[in-house]
Image (cartoon, rainbow, N blue to C red; front, side, top):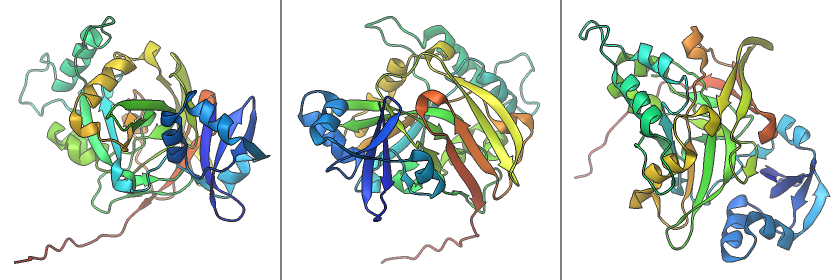
Length: 331
């Protein structure tokens, strides 16, 4: 079962559900967040909440996408209460590019491991603990809140000060915190964890800066467990032609950590267990065009697709105008 959010023909918010190849409106509900709140109060989870509402007319997802009417598959009434975070160096093969980016400029011997490679090896050795055991914690970063999330099909802004505007094709876990402070996973979605790789390459301590960028996820929320093997395609289109494309792998079969281990090390902090909050937690990638020497330009279109997640995620990129930073005293 997949869920979408969109604007209907009258411009009102609506929720759609895809089952058995057909997408229909979920009647009497305007958001997946609202549906999740109902699901946490009842029996049968999201599927039961959908059944309780009943289904209306069929909708054409492709048409909604073409007309720019799709929303992110979940949002929060107060965008500040949707948190976007992520993990890196979690996928088999993900260390090669990062290792090259972070090699010291002559300060260390070539045979010494970078911090990236050390972190990757820690994941290989202890990222998939046995049931009841705790695995090693991964690299973790904060990306932003709901104000930084861009709807599918809409332009991802790159700040004027950015040195790079690069895609990262990932899978994101989608969570709502219940009234008891318990994280409740709704499912998973495609995600573009847009980053500034040139800034990160200057110094690993700039990683936090490089991640404070907009992002996009969706268009569909795949309800349920994450598939063990995910094999999609990431591409960049320029002037209508494919500039670059490459397969990306995800799912635990292709990762050095379990999803449960990554979830534990995020939600072990009380800060991230505040009732009512929404979390979009991105699980990393081993594929990015920057590793192949691609430098994106305004109006390039990012495209991430994987058939198990429904519609592809497409976003053009635009560069924002310089904005002066003025700090005013209040004394």
